[in-house]
Image 1 (cartoon, rainbow, N blue to C red):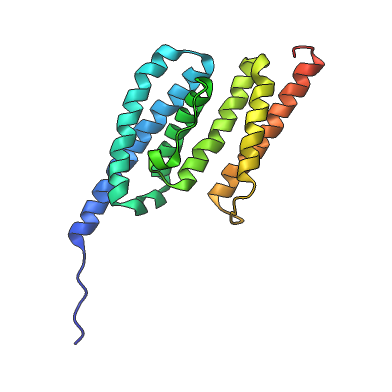
Image 2 (cartoon, rainbow, N blue to C red):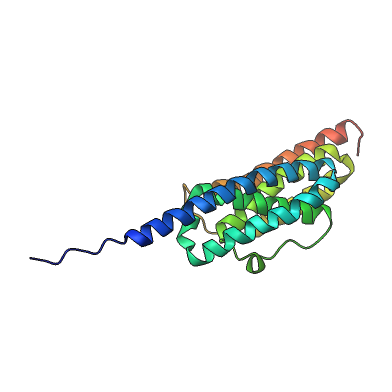
Amino acid sequence: MTKLPLIPYRLLEQNNKEKNTCLDLSDKLRILSKTTINFLVKGKTDIVRKNLPVMDKLFKKMRSILRKNPHLYGVSGINIGLEEYLEALFVHSYIKNRSMPNINKLETAPEVYLGGLSDMTGELVRLARRENKQAAIIHDYIAKIYDLIIPISITKNSNLRMKLETIGNNLKKIEDIIYDLKLRDKI
């Protein structure tokens, strides 16, 4: 009789524990990041200064687990919080006129990085609606990001494809905002 396979009970238990920990951290990170983005766009920097260090800690905890267990990036609930965090970092960097965080420094999956970047363009559109005088500058910035993502090879039905198409859609939205502002002699 053929020998029975060894069932990795401990490994499975450890994996489930790490997955659940990451899902919990991701949810906390998502909520804090969405709140922070909202305050960033509205110019409420006091709350942002309080939230960023907390978000950084949550991200670092997740990143340490993901380094040991990178297949957890395949769990969509985990990526949601990571993308929101990166989106908040990107919006913050844009508003503070700083360089965008480097993917190598962040040590995250390329899809997560690009997802956060894509979502950031939507927040820039919101910012342009609030700050009419910034609309043209924001348009040029989003257009440059769009030019950078065009050569990326993506599959037909991937989540990444939809995220990257969002950048093009946000570019169209900001063009509409600028057109409307010009019609109303606001810029």
